[in-house]
Image 1 (cartoon, one colour):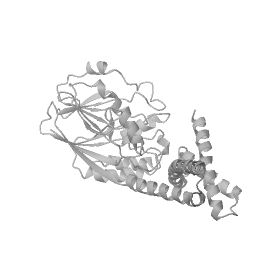
Image 2 (cartoon, rainbow, N blue to C red):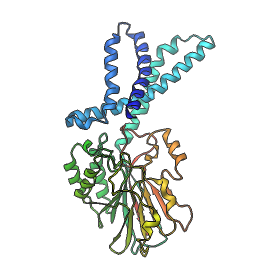
Image 3 (tube, one colour):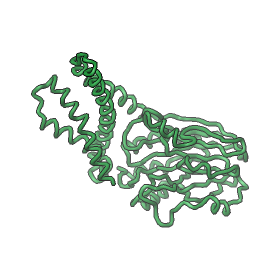
Image 4 (tube, rainbow, N blue to C red):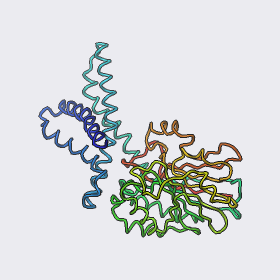
Length: 371
């Protein structure tokens, strides 16, 4: 299946590559098609190689990840803009209108528009915002609670380790009682992390009164799942696999296993029914749930107090945010269906998938003041 997607991706690259070559020949009539073809073939190879770059030296991996990720963006937007240009050419031809200026300067428009979208999107990704909420629970936590939420770190993706380092400085400045991770700490392959020991050391430096708790997301899976679980343990992150844990006899946290892991967890790590879990819990304390996918919030009724999710990235890039909005009852932000139902917060996440780019959402650390 993956091979079919890769072949399709390379096939689609031919169109913007060919149209760019035709346009460049207007200004550089002696442009060598063979040399151009070789250069342009290397760029989509680099973008595919980002998914396998853990097999090369670290410095090479960094270059491949950035070049491949940026080119994937260039391909997507230039494909769309060239398509618009060619539709315009067809319309002008049909109307018997001179197309000389359109064809001569259309390529400039493609590159300018592509740059105007990509550059702000990359800058937006590199910035981490703090998003704050105040939540009143149906079952009060004595003395209140200050929680910090992150999700979708995607360790192993482009620039992820530098990104989490910046985020930890923000987290540690928030004076949190508890830090909560709503899934997708990893990007499917533990071996894609450049410096796992250094990253684990950074994570052990998270400051909070009650520690750090996490649930599994769909990308926290695959053949290297045992390494991921061991890494979390070494990082002093408490992984809750369909488990309730009581914290200082003040509140409970339930961490859910993602129901659709990409590549699977292990044979013991399977999401069980909420009914089975509830038989093991007395609900005498306020309960916070970590459940990566907000599509599952319908499982929880008024016995629960706060549901924390990620997964959607709030689309990450336009117009995918409209798609996530259609797919999920809540794809970002605060939601409460009824006063007697649990509050829900969905984070747009801290990291990215595949491309170092965000145009429809932000990378965020979420602070939650709970009473």
